[in-house]
Image 1 (tube, rainbow, N blue to C red):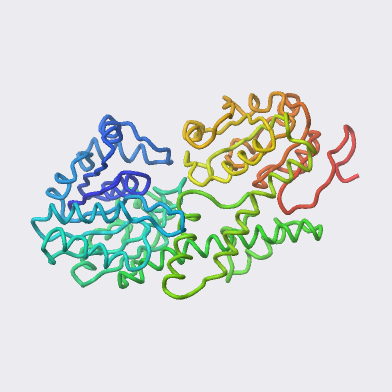
Image 2 (cartoon, rainbow, N blue to C red):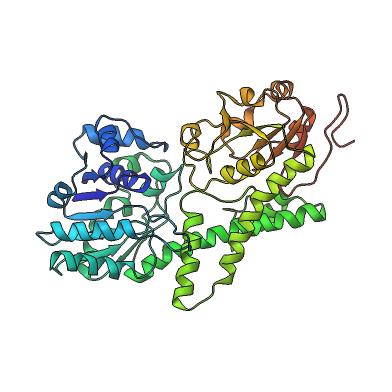
Length: 458
C-alpha cells in the first residue's frame, strides 16, 4: 500500500520505518527541511533502539523516502497519517493548531478519495473536526477519517509497533476498516520477516475496530490509567517511608496479583516524557468540557509533582544547606533508551536544586545535547566519574543500565562527600552502603552507611 506520513518526529518516523519494514511503500514528510535533509542523507535525528537500522534498510530497499513537499505526499499516496504534535496549552487542553493546519492543507490538495488517519494523540471529537476541516478546504466528502492511536513507549517504540498488545482503529465506515485491516495484516498475522525469525513467535495480534470517538478515548484512558498506577506507587512509597516498610517488597506483593500486574509499579521521581503529562492534562480538560470533573486525575498530577519535590528534599536533608554545594546528576532523559527531555523529571529537580544555590554537574549517555535546550548553567560531563568529581552529593534520575554496574569505590573516591540519592531505586542498597555511601532511595528503610569492616546490618 502507498502510505504518507505527515510529521516525521518520534511517532511519525517510527510508524514510517515500521510500515516500510512490513512491505508498504512509505513517503515521510516534514515541514522541517533540515530534518528531511538529514534523513535523506541517512542520519536519524532521534535516538530510538533499532530505528536507525530500519530506516537505513528500508530506504536502501526503496520502500522509504523523505520529502518536505506535502503536495508530493498527498499526490503519491492513498493513506495519509497525521503524526504532528499536540502540545499542551497553558489551560491544560491539547493545542490542535498543527492538526487543523495539516487537515486544511490536505483538503486543499485532494484530487481523489483518500484515507486520512489521525495518529497524533488527540481529544475525543477531533476526528469530526478533521473531517470538517478537510471538507471545507476541499469541497469533497469522498474521503475517510480514521483514528489509529499509537501505544509506543519511547525506548522500545520499534518493538511496540511491530509486536503490539493490540491495534485500535476507529472508523467511519467499513471502507476505512477494510483498508486498515489490509495495512496492518502483516502485523496482525505476524507474517513479516522479523516476526518469522522471532523466538518465541508472537501469536496473532488483536485488531480492534471501534467508532472514531471510542478510539480517541481509548488512548487517553490508557495513558491516564498508567499514570494513575505510577502515582499510586509513589504515594505508597511515602507511606512506606513513614511506616518503615519497603516499597519494592510491597510492589512485588501487589504486582503478583493478576488483576493488578507488575507494570508501572516502580516508585521513583515521577513520570515524564511527551505523552503522559500532556495526555493526563488534556484528558482532564476534555472531561471538564464534557461536564464531568475527573478529580482523580487532578490528584494523579499533584502526586507526580510532589514526587519530584521529595527528591529535592532528600538532597537538602542530607546536605542541610545547598548553596555552593556541587551535585552530580546521573541521567537526564525522562527514561532509559531515549534522548527525550520533554517533561523529564530531571528538569524540575535540577532547576529546584539550582534555585537553592546548588551547582550541577551532569552525565547522560544520550540526552545531554537535547538537555541543553532545557537546562542552563549545567556542566555536562563525559562519564559518571567525571560528573562525581568534587561532588557533595550524587543524584540518580534515569535508570540507564550502565549505572547499575558503576565502580562504586572509584565513584566514592571522586566525591567530596559520600551522599547518594537514588531517585529510581536502581542501585543496590547493600552495595552502596558497603562502599561507604550515605544512601537514600524512594520508599525503602534508611540505614546508615557501613563503616569499614562492619556489617551493614550491625
